Length: 457
Image (cartoon, rainbow, N blue to C red; front, side):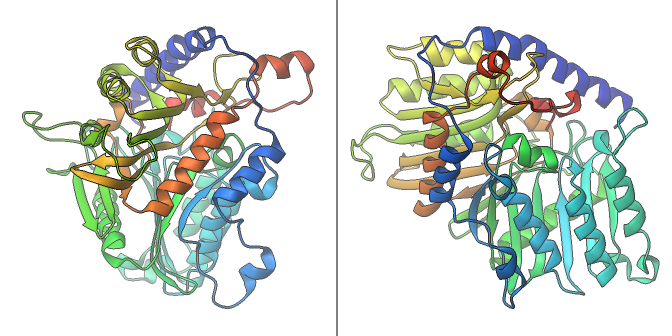
């Protein structure tokens, strides 16, 4: 990462952690002791929402293909529940054929299992390319030996003798890959073929790190067999690989019920609306035909929500609540002004629940929600029975508009149902408060390194 970008990131992280996180802890609403997410209760709920990852015996049998639809991980569960997402990704890498193609964009890569799988795929003859944020490539003070090993190995084993388009490589962008500022923040995994599946796209909030499994609540949505969706992601990856600003960086590509959207959001502001705000403005709160009450149901799971952009989005959510929408929110970080709008600017507060744990009380969360999801059930763009889910890497904070982000809009009832059920589980069962663990000392958990502070990824 260039010094200016590193300084900007440091300022953003510091301001977020010190100016936002600590006041939020102090400003948490006074309630009775919340229900606790335990390894067993959340695990059972997660099992209800998404099918378990396949067993090792089933993985090895002929005809494997990645599970389509949404996968959630539960950092409070057992090993299988924590590793559901990374397991799906590694299995897809392992089942990539000899002449296959793997393309990955991840803000960070710090998982030895995935590194080994990617090296193995390259040695088999697959074309492997990985883009990640320059700030995570590793320094003397903060080394990333796995990434350095991956970069070395991808350059070997006959790589130079391959046609240029099939050579493997790992690279980072100067800032955002398709813009002039921001960061490379997208999180998607592309497989031209894996097992019996073709044209596979995996998109969500999951970075390719150990932290993403053990310290974060994440999601990954997998699309199989839809070549136009794959092609849209593949074209965007190719643009990212060139690391040059794209004139019309914000693009949308619709294939049936799935629309892929790519940031940065660039271009003249006149007559244009923030993409997330545009989604919210398409909602009407009364007259829904697919909810029992006739009120449109809105669910939000958001890691970071603050700044001027966050305030604009908060005012729209407040208007929706005042207009009769059924709104429920889980989050990790909110600015104080966003909190004020959601809690106080109306006859009743919006229902919100913070999903975080801070074991050493240093203002940097040790476990936290990392999803960036919006669901709409009801009236949307003139339709009275819509089922809309948006997932991906885009937080509701200012930096998103200048960064590489990938968002899927999925208009399918089963997808919305799965996301809503998981958000409701988190809302009803937030992690037990930090002070309970600090007082009882029942458990020791390693803290998140400052490089992994919430807004940075």
